[in-house]
Amino acid sequence: MATIHTAHHRSGKASLRLLGGVEREVIWTPKPTSERVDLLEFWFERWTARTPFALQVDLLVDGNWQTAYENKGNAPVGSFRNHVSIPLEGKLPKQIRFRSITPPSSGVMIDDLTVERSMPKRVASVSGTTRTVPLLVRNEWNPVFEVTVDVQGNEGSMPLEEVEFTLSGSLDLNSIEKVEVIQSVPPQPAWFNVVDLANHQELKLFGSSMLLAKRMVVSGKSLLERGENHFLVSVKLKDSADVSQTLAVRCPAVTVAGKRYELESPKETTPLRLGIALRRAGDDGVNTYRIPGLTTTKAGTLIAVYDARHRGGGDLPGDIDIGMSRSVDGGRSWEPMRIIIDMGNDPKWRFDGIGDPAVLVDKNSGTIWVAALWSHGDRAWHRSGQGTRPMQSGQLILVRSDDDGLTWSKPINITEQVKQPSWNLVFNGPGKGICMEDGTLVFAAQFQDERRVPHSTIIYSQDHGKTWKIGTGGHPHTTESQVVEVRPGVLMLNCRYDNASTRVVLTTSDLGATWQEHASSKKLLIEPGACMASLIDVDQELGESRGGWLLFSNPDSQRGREKITIKASQDGGKSWPQDNRLLLDEGLGAGYSCMTMIDRDTVGILYEGSTSKLVFQRIPLKDITGD
Image 1: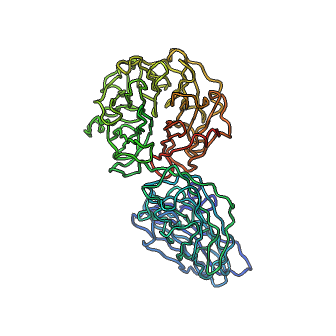
Image 2: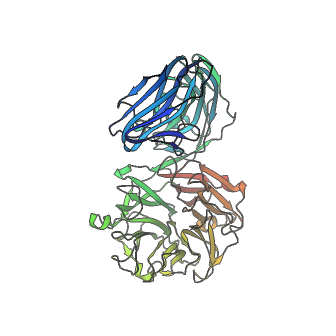
Image 3: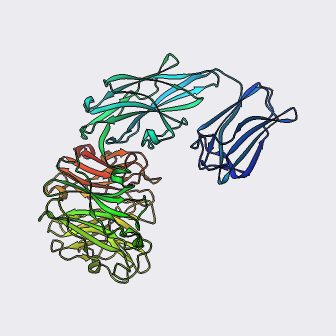
């Protein structure tokens, strides 16, 4: 009939779920009280727009059931969007009955149920919160500050009328198109879910302003509900905004029902960093963009590669191609996306999807190489088999560009060069590869052995990409690794680990013929379950000494793919000091990232963020290293 539901609730830790079905009934017998009781209030959620739908509340008064509330199908669908307030005329009923009719596998959720006497509404507190999230060019909505107005009482009208705020930081205010205040409906935080106000049922516009100043006021009118009411300050940037700049937003006060309330918030607000929403869901008709790779060419051009997942967000097999974006001004602007690998579109073969790209640059010739996994039909991670042909196994494909990314070769299949027929799969680690000091080209790689146990390794070429070889397995149950050359001829492999929320770190001095576990392995670098990460050597990338720094980026959390953070080590990865860590995005995202050195002072990072599918940012190296 009903159950306590802990996975979804409006506040607290649980809600009451009336299960789906023809008719459900729950009777609540409240504890008797001599106190005056004027109101019964609760919020409910309708799960689906499918019919039938009905919700009825009955009160047992003087031995008779009386219908106090009834909804027969016009309740909005969505997260606790329906508020019910029932007068009780000073007396608590002996029993309260909830009856619902909903389709199977759905139901009605009820939360924040109270019985109380009428009290005039009043503002109990007003507070402000800022989150570390990127402020993105191309985003319609950039929530940068949250205002929470806590209202007590249930009687009368109490409107929010004005939100004051200040703008500071290095960003020219002329680079801002407008500032808006958005109310979250129902009143709960929506920090990392602001996509498109016109299509988002849980948000509504309070007010906006295009007349920008360092101190300003946005006016509107929003009736406040009892409890916490959440409002987000959102900044829309012009496309011309300089992504190297910062902006800080602070809200000193709000006006509610004609009275000014100062916020209980820190006086100092850390400026937010700008970036670019390089790829958003729906751009160029593509459903989802994932799996970033990023490199800097010999000419200084940035090349970004990624999955263009046309029909959905899932991994291979599927209708997936390799997309490429190119920037010739250090990531301040980007050329339109181009598809550089498309293996086919026949539904019979699951559209011949190709994904999980990695990119590297031959520092001697300038040639750019991109590696990716081709699934001819269902021959990706779970269904690839022994053998080396496309009808048997996933294929390792390369393309090359000899003109700085302007044109690309036809696909080059190197599967037979690197795959042992007894293995079930071989492909690159997504992200980027390197060119060693002696000119050897190296991609991190992974293979599934005959028992489907994954191992990280490398694939490499000592003749500028004409032929390729593969190393041995470095460590079982590792995948999606990244590689750097920590000393001449010595490679470090930093690996995703399936068996713990930590990173496996390996080294080899013989191109993967043998491997040694690094002192930091499984100890210093955490991850959320298992997730791809990025590792670069600053000196190696630049071809000059900049202090011997290694940079590592990933979600710095064991809870979920949140807190995208860059960490720096100056002792070859033996330690990653707290002073050399920079949080970029604390929100939840898909979590993959890839870094490159844009120039001797600037790190470029492309990552799956909380506010765009692929986020690009320019980060001063000194902000990480302190130098």
